[in-house]
Amino acid sequence: MCYSTLMKNTHCVHLIISGRVHGVGFRAFTVGVAKRLGVDGWVRNRRDGTVEIVVSGSQQTVDEMLGELHKGPLAARVDAVTINAYHEKIQQGFNRLETA
Image (tube, rainbow, N blue to C red; front, side):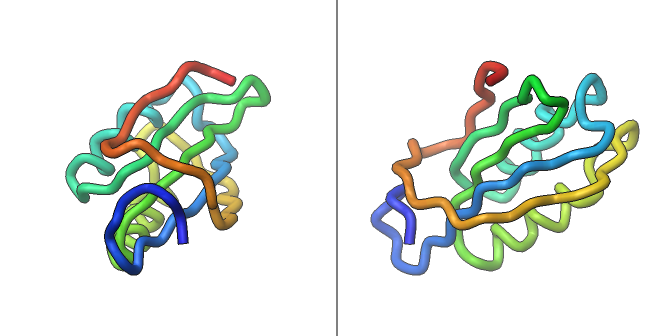
């Protein structure tokens, strides 16, 4: 369980998305999907060309988010999605962070 909210059954994942994911609106796409689904977390580009995302919500909404991220925006090409559990505190809402 993560530390994002007081909700029971909150599921948190840390994702690394690789492929053609920089310069194609991937972060904006991610923020839009996250806000539509009501999940918490954040997204940022990484200097190695990947996108890093943390998502927190019910199992169902996290799964829906994962499905959307596997597709990405039209100009993107998602080659791989690495998924790990996430156990750090997450602020409420979904934010776009600076490149790391």
